[in-house]
Amino acid sequence: MTERNNDFTTNGARRAFLKSSLMVSAGVASMGGLGLSRLAVAEPLTQRYPDELVEILDESFAKYRLFNASVEKIASGMRWAEGPAWVGDGRYLLVSDIPENRIMRWDEITGSFDVYRQPSNHSNGLARDLQGRLLACEGSTTTDIGRRVTRTEPDGSITVLADRFEGKRFNSPNDLAVRQDGSVWFTDPPFQTGNYYEGHKIETELPDAVYRIDGASGAVTRVIDSISGPNGLCFSPDQNTLYVVEGRAKPNRLIWAYPVNEDGTLGERRKHIEASAYGALDGIKCDEDGNLWCGWGSSGAPEAVTADLDGVMIFNPAGKAIGKIRLPERCANLCFGGAKGNRLFMASSHSLYALYVNTRDASFGKYGS
Image 1 (cartoon, helix red, strand yellow):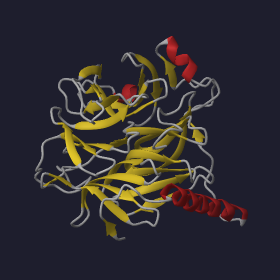
Image 2: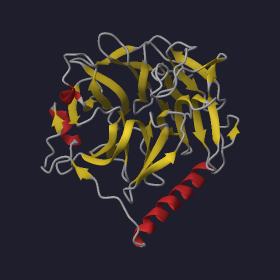
Image 3: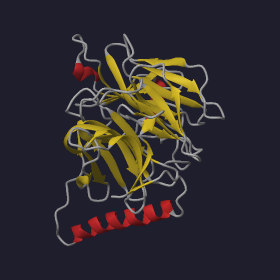
Image 4: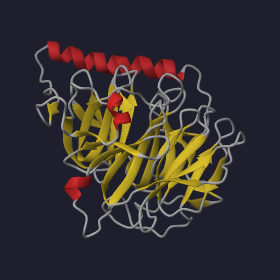
């Protein structure tokens, strides 16, 4: 694949992406009519309604739980699943399998689960920009590339949006979010720099930080450098608040809330959520009502009971826990998708899980969806 200079204006990009995506899915679907193999339907983890794995912690969560929807296992076989992104134009989900250095593709029409890209430069967080193009946090190197944020063009070529700041290479870009002005915000912790499992051991050059790529000029600015291990991030429905997970906060992981100014700078932060009782926050998404849906697991403390923690926690706009989705694996990240935007996809260690809920992503039908 060729590489291009940073260019945020591609005419007809979303139209071309939609056309090619639908052709791929339609082609795969038609193969089923020829008698070729198709994967089985999703597997519900329980047979009872309402699903006992979807817990109401506060009565306000009841309206988001669908009485006759089950937590379903839709794919497996990964080593560490991360950063899912829904591609509604083609009705498929992309998810990173970091140790295997690949991006996997789950097709909603056929249920097929195949390699989308390999190598992926140990990609982590995935998202789509306002034109529907795939954005990826490439967390480590394959050869002499990686540790960067890229965009996949409609013709399959790769555009590097950012690979360094002030002349120094990023650590391991982790997760990203797109704002309605076209800017791309991403976290850069050192998580993939200390082992050969999720990449390569390196000496980091930059402090832990959060960066913003300007939607018009492509200029990169550092917007946060005061938290340890920045991880998942997302915007509130009105785009005026940025939520960021501090993955190495002590004694407990935190979510900070930052006011977003008109010029793209951030105001004074406030502590929004603290993961107590040995819980561990990871990827996060905000729904249309301002609730945060958070990937959840164990902090690794010896006292933690992992089986009681793995899954997804849901917090209301005030930071109160209102719901929980129990999973048999730790959930690293999640996203909303499906034909109507109300299907929650959960990237959880070795597998993908899904649950229909009565809400949608804050950006549904607006931007980056």
